[in-house]
Length: 310
Image (cartoon, rainbow, N blue to C red; front, side, top):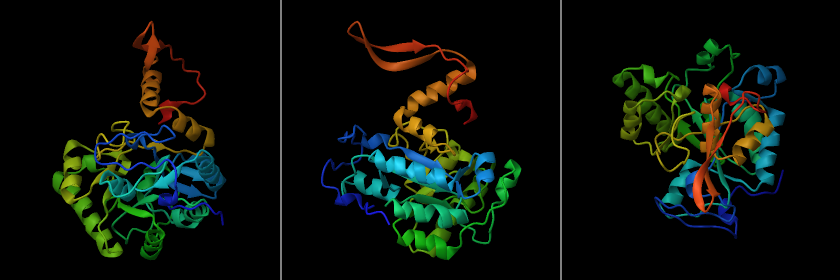
């Protein structure tokens, strides 16, 4: 067992208290509004599954990614922690990161959980509210192999170890394709089901497939959630729209995650769009002849990482 504590309040240096709307910059240069939010799905010990399915990360690469976060000085927090920070009740660590894991697969408990504990980290795990669903039937359309989901006792154990449990609807539909009534049922009943199981209502929601509309966002807010995660949509800054929080997709590649942590999210988004359209991109905030201007760089299709896949 590694000795690093996952209680960031024990850190003595570089702490900063904040309140809603604040933009403190910590010793590391990370601001409260630009906390990386990582998105995982499955952590598997099957190399073939990890290689063939983008939602899967092999256990060995997951450990390397956690080791990298540790070496780079990141400390994991949850949205519950972030809300307490916004209320001015606790400080944030110098380099916070939010690790999210979607869908509630059993390997979140058997593979990811032990490694996160070993590295003194915690995560936000988004689970379904319908416990009669025992495997990922929604993944069949993407040719992802069947995988067992966690049961109630395993989810409760994660909660006891400081993990935040968030809602991911009842049955994993694309909310943007449902009627208002159907979407409300998926959102509200999942919240009530988790409240019954865990003894406390979840404060964070996650849109399956990142499928959301203005109406679904309003329904999530109406239900009582204070945060909601998307996939590729939403502002680059975590604080700009709490009901459409953009996340960094983590794949079975350590170097790709490293690049995404180094390069600002708005620049990555610009590169993706430029690659799709094979055009030039603008790099903001460059001083030229005493004035702040944008650099214009050509984008070629032969790059080290194909962001168009995301």
